Image (cartoon, rainbow, N blue to C red; front, side, top):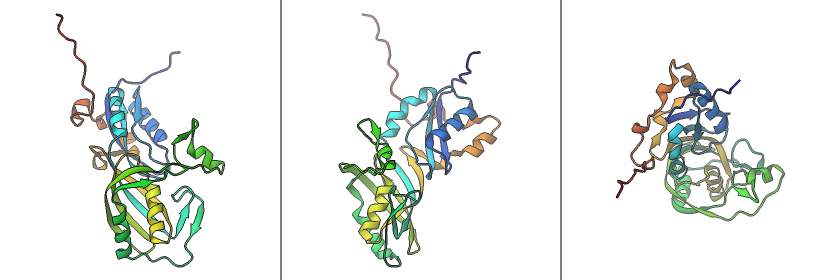
Length: 250
């Protein structure tokens, strides 16, 4: 029996990825729900993270390159007092403040100001960057740490949303390639108390916003999930490559 390939859908699904799923797992659930033949996402979110996952169906997969290079925004919760090997709450604690942590607003605002603009980051070992054909996280899982060259990224804006002394919520707008886990770790080190990510939510990818995203639960409850797709003619101008035209014969 021939394998069912699904419908030839063209468009973009703005998915609000839930916590606990990998980006690919969330994409595959959405793809099955919509019965789409072809789908891909345009930038991984860690399983512990939530928020905007741009899923491209059919011909819309042509915008994937533009989206991978797009600026992004995140809402991040920083937990002060401990640093982990992964840079987030899923990791093993590798450093801990010796005294009770009570970060003041003045101290945090001063540190945040130092990370705005062009900065250098050392990519975390728990990342998909490859060395000798193998992602760094595979080395990290074996307890191997490799030297990684620092990379330049740009932080356009960091806004402090809330602070309770041991935890802060910030809003970050940044260039492609920015690791928010590394940013959290570096902020903690600059404060002298260590830090890791307790939560992360992506709110923007290029021209797309979480405001228009749909959850998996809502998508699966729709009578016609295809209605959640942004059609090709609804996409912001310039995202899709121009369609080549045949020249008139001489």
